[in-house]
Image (cartoon, rainbow, N blue to C red; front, side, top):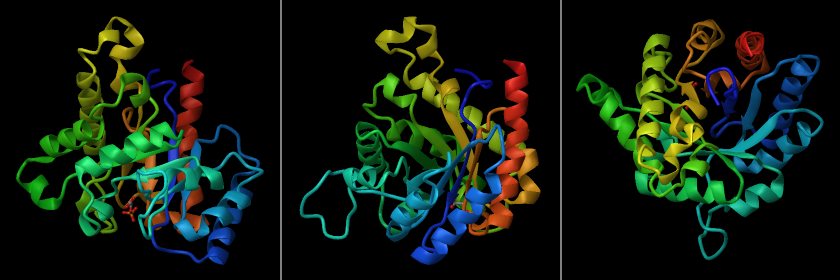
Length: 276
Ligand code: PGA
C-alpha cells in the first residue's frame, strides 16, 4: 500500500459532549449531508460510551463508522466502571481511539497501557486510532521527534508486523488540542513522515522483511493529524502527502463544521483515484 491507496479518514472525537438525543441528531445530520456524495473518506464518529448505540443506529444505512474514545484491554471481570472490547464490538462499534493525550494526562494512561489496549483492539477486530504527540514544553525543548518516536515504538511493542498494518496513528501535538493553535501543515507532514519511518524501522529486522510489502510497514498505515483542525485549515492539511486525514475535536461537534472537512478530503481522494 502506498500514498495512493492508503485510507483517508476524517474522525470526529466528540469527547464528553452530547446526550443521546443530541448525538443522534448530529449523526443524522452528517448522514443526510453526505448521502449523495461519492468518493467519501472513511468517516468515523466517536461519541461518548452512552451514545454509542444511538449513533450506531443513526448511521446504519450509511458508510459512516462508529468509534469509542477509550476502552479497557481486558474482556470482562471485576473492573468497575470499565468498558471491554467485546462490549464495543457487541454494539457494532468498529474503531477505538487509544491513548488520547487527555487520557494520558488526566487518567494516568501510559505507553504500557496504550500497548495493552492496542493489542486488545487488534485481537477484537477493532481498528485502533493510536494518539501520539508532544507537550509544549517538549516541543520547546526540541524533544518532539524523540517523544513521538518513543510513543510509537512503545505502542507497537510485541505487535506483529502484519497486525501493525491495521492500525491508524494520529499525530496530535498536545499544545494544539482545543487551543486554536494549529500546527503548521508542513510540520504535521514532517512528523507524519517521522511516524512512518519509526514504524518501518521497528520491523526492519522482521523475519518477513524479504517481502517488499512488509518492509514498507510505515508507508502502509494511515497517519492522521489532530489539533484545532477547522474548515479554514483542512485544505492545506489535506495537501500534505503524508497526512491521510484528521482526528477532529471541537469542529466535529456541529455538522456545519464537520461536513466541510469531509468535503475537503474528497478532493484528495479524487486525486488518488486519478493516479491509480
Ligand atoms: P480539537 O481536538 O480539534 O478540539 O483540538 C482534537 C482531539 O483532541 O482529538
